[in-house]
Length: 228
Image (cartoon, rainbow, N blue to C red):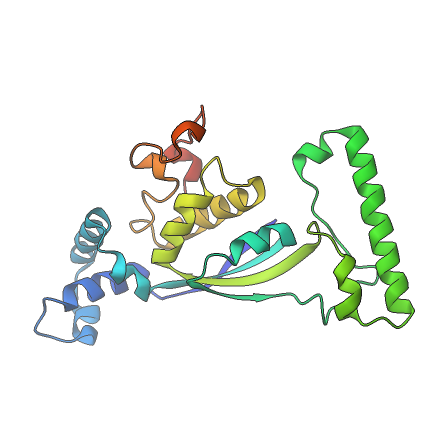
């Protein structure tokens, strides 16, 4: 898995502070952006996050380049609707000799199952290439490709959606691959926006576990999500 933050709102926490202060200020946003002190910005952002007035965090956006993940992951990822996505197309990209796939740890750690898994993947891809060679369009040959197929995607989310994304996908009950992705994304954004994402992560970091009888025996620690 390769996750990189390739773009984000400049001075994101200053933007959050400006949006918050504007509601009560006699001057405009440009004036506030240029004249708020760093200390004022920090105090405002901490107040915003603590009070959960999160509409102000919708003004800052983060764009990630994500590679080395499965289609099984992206099927889950795109369910987060307040985001923008562009994904490598299996309709237009033909996987002749450049096909990669993701193997879950539980399969990789089971030698007997792992061997059969690899054989099945190889057989599927071989037939896929045979269909392409026989003139079947890639948009139709792709129907046989499994959820394990490696894919690449660009994702843009605002901070409010990221906070929600982290609350459900950093949880130990999340599927392993998207959980790993969420943790990587959180560690990255903490570096550029440390106050907004200071307490981000699963809900159990901020209060009782909402999973009821399904809650995990070993909940994560805040240090598990420290910035890189």
